[in-house]
Image (cartoon, rainbow, N blue to C red):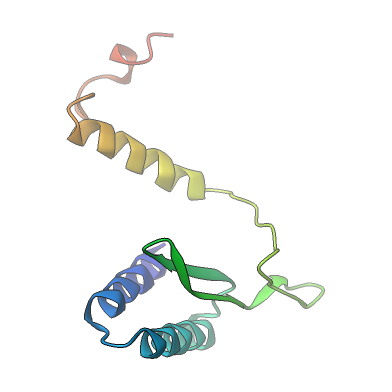
Length: 111
């Protein structure tokens, strides 16, 4: 998860500071290929800016046992990633003062 955050932050910086869209696409490709080579990243990357797909590619293997490569159509098991989305939703509710993080959960889920 730490590496995912680092690459996401790097992509954000590329979007903010890159002068030419074509060069941004090439930079995304270089970052992803390096990340895959160094850390063995397997997955798909899609970058959307202003409702326009500006980069999409697949890396590594969908199934290491059979050597099946990832594609844009590869379906992944969500495993523990749903915890990240749940934590994000809870923090957004706290930010909007709809719940307090230091109150007992029974206050919000009495059952």
